[in-house]
Amino acid sequence: MIKFLDIQKITDSIEPELSEAINRVVTRGWFLLGEEVAAFEKEYSEYIGTRQCIGVANGLDALRLILKAWIEMEVMKEGDEVIVPANTYIASILAITDNRLKPVLVEPDINTYNLDISLIEQHITTRTRAIMVVHLYGQACWSAQVEEIARKYDLKIIEDNAQAAGAIVAQCSRSEAESRESGGLGAQGNKDIKLRRTGALGHAAGHSFYPGKNLGALGDGGAVTTDDDELAEVIRALANYGSVKKYVHNYQGLNSRLDEIQAAALRVKLPRLESDNQHRRTIAQYYLENITNSDVILPQIEGLGEYFSILRPVPCTLCYDHVWHLFVIRQPDRNKLQNHLTENGIQTLIHYPVPPHKQKAYRNLNLLTLPVTEKIHKEVLSLPVSQVMELTEAERIVDAVNSFTSK
Image (cartoon, rainbow, N blue to C red; front, side):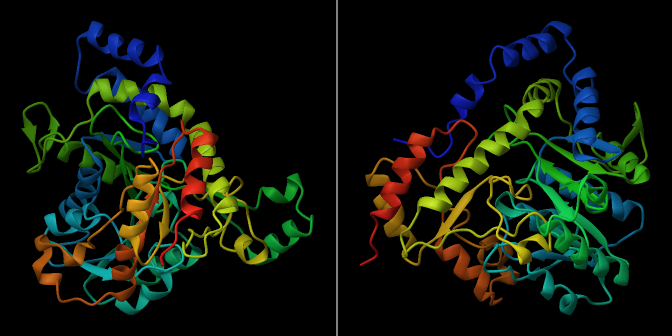
């Protein structure tokens, strides 16, 4: 059986460094708010490209704390609205409702599965305070239009970067892109192209280090990144019982801290993230080039930036705005395809079978009709992809997908 994700193989690939890092923590005897967390926060903020990084307990808490901090800072208040993609994992929406804010669900682009940016503005009201973009499946959801809308309506932008650690957005003008395409941009011209990582695009971002993520811990873990020093200070206090110093509590906070062992493990993995993501791109490229079954809909990539994809197709090995946390295909008879792959010794998963607005947890949203989101959730199936996956395994998967017939 080809596993969907071989966590043990990933863990084995970073030995003995992983065990040495864990032993370092155990020997030191300091397990919370210590040297490893401080070092990881510094290293991760430098990697992402922000001034601040706050380690927290998980990705959901990262998003919850961003919103909670803005409420404490009186940037928003109970009942205010946050625009969020309808096609996302439920955690994106839980973070909003947990803060007694109102999620405004917007349909995705059927090609990328990410938030359809062209639909944002029509959902803005006098109560809108923020836009949450989700870099779903590992593909950056960003454009200059998002920033323009936020400026126009004075909105905060939150990134849910739980699935896209390491993705890079390249932005330039159309004329610069055309010049680059014709060979006119040399080393001097390249300085006009802005390269920014997801997690450093908006006002604040939530990150998840769940073990199955591209950058995964040994258990739960998360972080917030931001350039807003005041926001970071409030979040750091809120995550530690609302404490600004020991036994002094300025806020009604939470207990949400990244522990030393998780930070130590993440420090071992972080220097490998670039090569890990590139291997995922190689597997994805093989799928895209070799899955030829017309009954299967393959994922689409947008390219290096908002203009490059218009000018020319970009192979995903060169498309750095996608880190392929998941390789998601679609098929109207998804269950039949999944059974076919299981019979061929291939484990697959569904991300996600039930959209948030159809969950019992959100009965107040159950009557919403979001046809694009609902179509995606009925048809998607995730194929195995990881940094330790062998090309021979990808070949077996391609053969099995190509042999599927929906008739």
